[in-house]
Length: 625
Image (cartoon, rainbow, N blue to C red):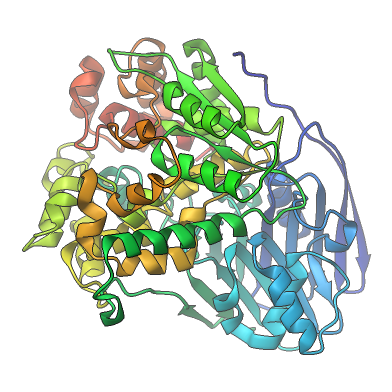
């Protein structure tokens, strides 16, 4: 199937200034809807936010929401928003939203699934509402419960609130960092946005490479844990964090969610069947919560256990005319490029309206520049381009999908978990099975000036494992992967690629109550059946056994794994360009070894070393860094 070219967005803008409040109004002509995005500037020196900077950030975020656009400034704070209409399709829910009576203004990206229940509770406390969506519920909830309001939210969110009467600004992010939140700080001001490129568009950002972040990128297959990013001048608000910024610039972070990975004595007598039933019920609730929308909800169906279970539960919950979508690629080096045989089985079982997208090699190459542009940070997983092209097709049919990300981290599905079960040195053992390379090897690959002074990646893992609240070595690994590696790779990947085409992706396996339950499950229940044992027990109640009892699959794009032909030319040209030579990140002899035999340099987790280093340079050049 061919792939259409990206449509452009035409914008005409006006500014209206009333005293110290200015409002940005935009007229939009669009061919397709996009996902929401937020941005803003907070002055800490008594100055006035830059209208030009806000406009440039909003323009950069246009792919996230041309259903509506706006900017509001109150004194030292200015917020911008691009809207995709999912809940409350009326203009009453437009953003940024101000409640004049409460003196609060918000810019919000995400979805609060339990907003109807919270609204009813707030109405019982005397609050009245002028809109029907979740944005206003957040405003009232902040006024009613302060920073504890986020503990009541079921959903994914990134938001900023300005308090008129105190001058404080509040930043908050959901428990798993599903919704992105990037920050740049310079003397006298702070800017934030839903994407790193939006901050670059605003200007005044230190774009030097962060050495510690580069160490993590090369060790954790492109993961850079928050608060760092690959460039020094941009940071991320960590997941499960509320940051309160005082008018004088002082700030305070509060982590509001940190579930224990330990056995609850009350669960000691639970059988495998009882754990199965508890997980099944929690999954039913999680999937049902993510059906909340004023538009239809579909599924990204890979044919694996996770997305198949979601499809089954949506069908069980009564989702009519359920649409499912799968993508496949050409084979390479004897490795098949699709799993259509399994997605077909599931689609047939539940009578979904199934769409299969096959991507020829020539279309894959053509999609790479758009994929790089959609990345807020460099991400090496081959399935980025798969999700990018899949999202392009899905966006022609639907605005919201559920996806299976998170199940492997939550329920122990990856192959590196069993070796950790009886570990006596979990940091060393995790490094052995998970790291792409150790610190000594990295010294032979990075130029001397780019080597961090210490083994930053191992130190990060050791510090995380040393924290209280994880009972066994496997619990420590699952906690790290769920709270860090997951949000900084698969979750970010899905957000970035779906947002490029106006698609809101929801991830029921990251329902926080489901994760709290899973954290209490004894490790042996997770590791049985080759991994994800308790989830496979659930799946046997719902989906065909052929989908369960098979070798674990991944989103295959074999052409990128075995970098060859035009893909090799693309990567070599980037890494030998003048920009790359001036940057000088990698040793020339290391690059020559990769160019000579790309397929001989595969990481322990089956990734291409050449694609890893080439993707970083391609991303830097794509975003003008």
